[in-house]
Length: 213
Image 1 (cartoon, rainbow, N blue to C red):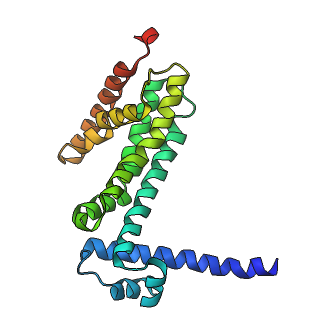
Image 2: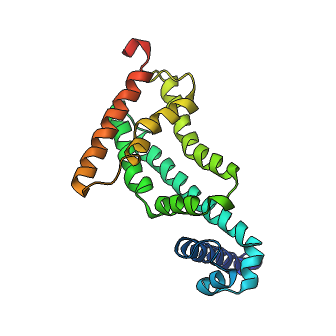
Image 3: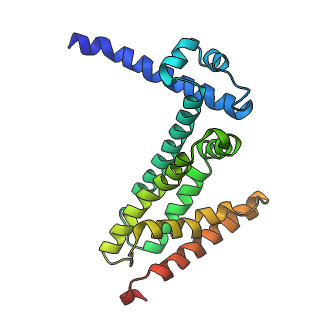
């Protein structure tokens, strides 16, 4: 028991240092760019030694990958939370899907993490492997695909390919909203709501089971 109590502060310190390094790296990569950011600068901002940065991440490119991966995981977690909040106890599927999209737009797409991820992958594309882009595309859709498949199993939808259904749903709703240029705030909110509602309805028409058509 004594050993466990002794190790707990050490583990907490390790987790905290890793988080501080990632936050410092993300800030510097976004403000200075990957090439102009140094491991020395990351270490100074995180208040750790340069050796500690290398011990945790190996090199600067691995640090960039870790920043992108952690940000992506935070986005996936918020999508899974939206599924838990809006798509579990469902009585009206259309309203539930609309509410899900609205939460995605505020907690995920509208979040600082999402904005940072987009900027990083855009600015530093040459330093990121193609497999990471594929993983980023796949991870958010996997959780949604599982829930859509469950809706198919209980007869709410006809879902022959859950992964394709998730791609169609995203394309018709929040990804479509993102494709529109920014407008005055009130007009932007109204247009986003309209696009989401019409996108959900289009999706439901496409995936309605025969007995519901």
